[in-house]
Image 1 (cartoon, rainbow, N blue to C red):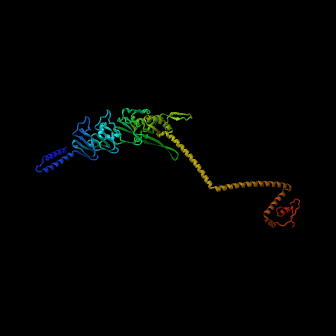
Image 2: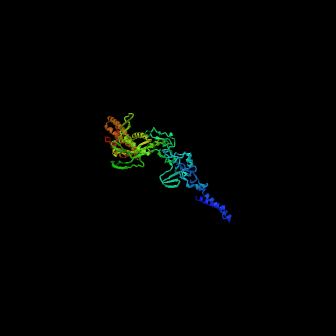
Image 3: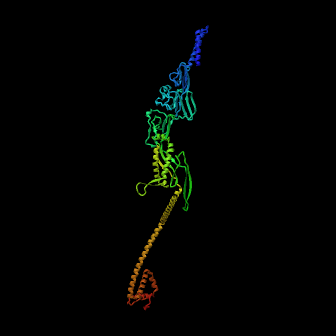
Length: 595
């Protein structure tokens, strides 16, 4: 404004000097002064007619003079009315006559949305929101760029208040007289408005929505984007416990369709997005009890002893769904650990969120109490087992403590079947139920363990005895092999002795036969010749046999026995022989030597 006043003063002075020819004595000087003042006046007028806008800035106009009044309820002028103007001046040089005189010009920063965030938009002018609506209807994706122009926004049904449409990362030359933008970057809240940019502490979070792999996003919309006739409620009759109403995408309520894994620039002030894990998860019920055990030991004498130990099993709420389930069987309270595999399908995810809120709430409020009740009822009730008498079908009897070990599969199948039914009601797919090791009181197991240990010791003793027997046989075989030559020799000697024994026996038999025959002959001879002559004959035969074996005795006999003449009467046939014997002195008789 001051430049305008100065320009008018300089212009007026220049006209006066030029018209009156001041100073009269030197008209040339007056003309020069008049032209100079006129040039200065033009400079003053020009200084009120241009604006230079720097980079990343926008010039905003507020008209002061020359316009009409705004319509009631309007804040932004579309047709040059006095007040905040819808048009803005982009970076660069702008010239308009008396621009800064007619308008109050404010240079404000462009709106910059950093990567990974979005900007929340609030419009200060526009059509009023429908009754009951908290957010303006979203703009179509292909009109968002036009919507950011204030004139287009106001002339094409833009609504006042919080906008559903958000600013994606980038730099925007917005009319901050119309739009107010908030960006939450951690604990810092950045605001762009008619005051420019301000940074302050805040809780607004405008981080983009990321749906990771293995998850889906269930959307609860606070905005009615589609006509009411297109938003009929949808119920899932297949899941009786979750017969809740959903709506099609774009309607107000919980959408039937889900957001698949991706990054979304979605206004979380207008849409609540719940992440639902669709991967198979493990719910563990364990810990929270003291485990007692009795250990058996065997000393060097084979006597069985026992020692008792205790171990506290801790419940970890960060990893475990709940504590181990205590079942009562035959009056004994037995902690039973359970593992359940569960999964929420993408089709059931909206019903889970609509009925309960999240998978964690279904785990805590719905299925965990049900699972604990089913395990207690089945383990502490009856068990169904195949008949052992050869008949078809199954037999039902009261559950025993050792069934938790010996017939665990039958109990698992029953529990899994019942839990699966309850899971279907809650929209949860029960993949598997597995029972862990039951914490059976050691008093019930120690007798069986002692029996088993004794049987094993007996079997070990028997095996050791067999091993010793085999060892003896082996050693004997080894010794036999080492003495094989002696054994063979001994066997040969035994065979030789047996042969000799047989030979001698045979010789004896032959001798016996010979002597018998000889005795018979001699007896016959004695009967013929007489016993004396037979004796003499046998002696002669032996003598002759001796001379036959040892001829050298003939010479010796000839030297010892004198020469005699032997004669016999020949009556008995032995006269000559007897004479010889007598001559040798072996026999005595009446014969005389001729000498």
